[in-house]
Length: 379
Image (cartoon, rainbow, N blue to C red; front, side):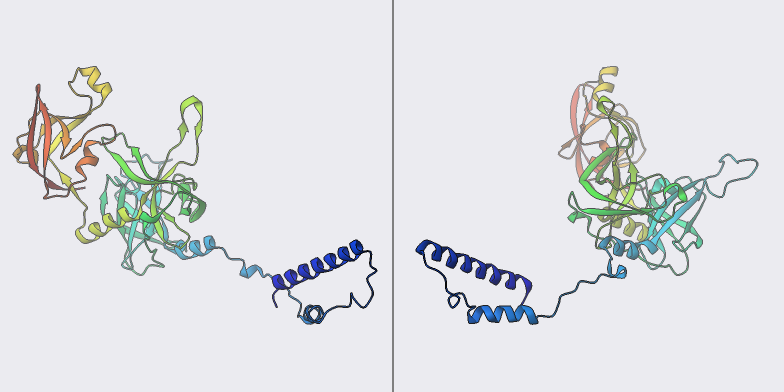
């Protein structure tokens, strides 16, 4: 008989006893000793309680294991520290440092392929990785994608572990996540825990395009964490940590806990193509351009507040074959008008090389339309 049932029967017995006592008092009768003798059922309940074996609760420290520690134990061996050397860096006291930049990465393939950020290895001539057990090994850059801020590295020889990539589309705000990486390049395989603050975030890069569909998290991310995994409680990589926003906002309030990661689904698509082709294919028009915003339009007296001003058309490019000229202002790609929420690059990236779409542009004071076949560029 379980504890809950025993308690329930005892409550019933107590209630029955109280009811009997109150009835005797109301009727003015004296309850005889014979009337309050325990019934057969009561006797059986008491005997069951007395003969039941005692319940003991014992806890061992070895049994106290959380899903967080399990996830870290699963993914931790697949996390690496990435070191890079940039040519021409200043030496210190006549000695060139062992590395100029550092970040993190995660092994995603048994053949030694590693995911990290493009900005971790950008402009480097030598790259190496340090495994969780301290072993250092040279690595080569297989390919990069500057717009998604992703890079794929490769090391030769066996790898200590492989991190599975999860489905980032199922992430929900409030879900617990774990960031693993090497902040400052020294504190290898540091673990921080937080939640998914939001999904589908967009960050303006200041380079003419936005990073879209990012995961926002309050798990602590510091310099050196870039390229490391964001992990769910199942022990799957759901994101690649890429940046943190710090500073003051409106009214002088300080921004804290604003970390961002590239969704694993996006990272997997980029990595798969880089591993297969050695590069990631991006749509290409073949123009040099400057973005137009309301401030720029006001300064230069332009007729539209949003769009891109064509400064050069590459010879024999898709734009050239479509009839675009220097001085044209592109205002729409397909059915999407360029504005604060739809930058030129991100709108163009909705198309794949080989697709055909329409471009709306302003030439002088006339709106024109042309059809263009999207080309391919290696990012």
